Image (tube, rainbow, N blue to C red):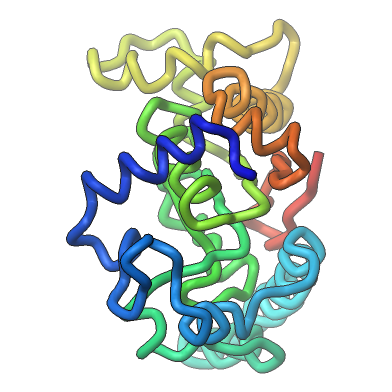
Length: 246
């Protein structure tokens, strides 16, 4: 049985977002329980182990990323990269129009070079994504992850930093920032350690965001305690395309 606060969260989101197909899709029962046939259609690509699937998808991406780097034209590079989906599947778009059942949720940076769907070779409907500069666990990000876990049943949440992150660079630097940027880098500065280089600071920031998810959300903390949720942090190296895990 779900903890009471998760039930209340699902009810609140169902009321507040009754018009959203992801909360109560066409084809769902009046109680909010998704129709069995629709659920099967949405889970056709769901792996047995979400983390293993992400690792396998990234291995395909990194191999194609390296091959693309050695290729001459932009068109040829795209052809190399498109091979990452040859071993994957795609959920029926008709089913996706009625609902979603992502197998993982990713909190990552808004950087244009960081696209979780690409780096994990995932199709539409497989990854629930929250992206903001610096991949910090801000209030709306945590609320979004609560929705993914408590309402959509997502079993894995990943907080991911990346090489050369501009937000972490700004947090380390001493130059003045705009008021809004100061707010953005505040949680990053809160976890900086003296002596860390940029890469270490980025990795530490991803770990800090992961810790904040359960420290500030009883819903996520309860899901972890119940064995229904795993939270991991990761680091994406743009040059190699490789994701490493901590």
